[in-house]
Image (cartoon, rainbow, N blue to C red; front, side, top):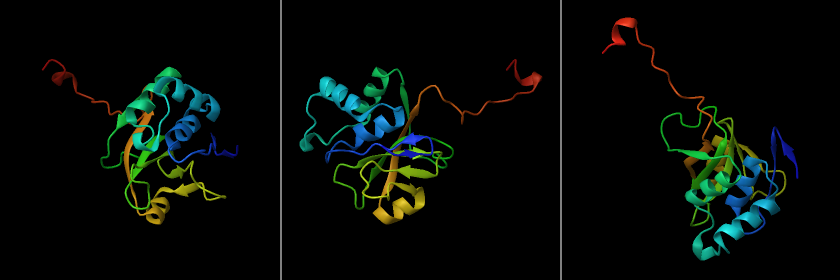
Length: 157
């Protein structure tokens, strides 16, 4: 496994296990452990089942005591965030693809071959003719939460 700026690169081993590899990479769990837990909890994920969905990833992360929360596509929803994100359309498989987003600027793809595993987000989207979807981040991290500051006269309203 190669280390990429704080992430250990974990490659997917089968066509439909990008979710297993991306989540293992994000949670820093060995691929074999994540695959074993996935099989124990969900059985064999055949191509007909389309691999892992959002709810599968959330359940697996909770098993590892790292609950995730969903961040749906909106203006600037990627800014500064690290997590597992869905990729759909274009050159992706018919059921989509899971990658790791790092600091809102970098995509780490578990399916890449050779050294083309780390991409700038814009370059990745252009190269694969695809778009990003729902982002899963650690539930406890709320770095983008906005606090409302009110003046004393508004507090009693």
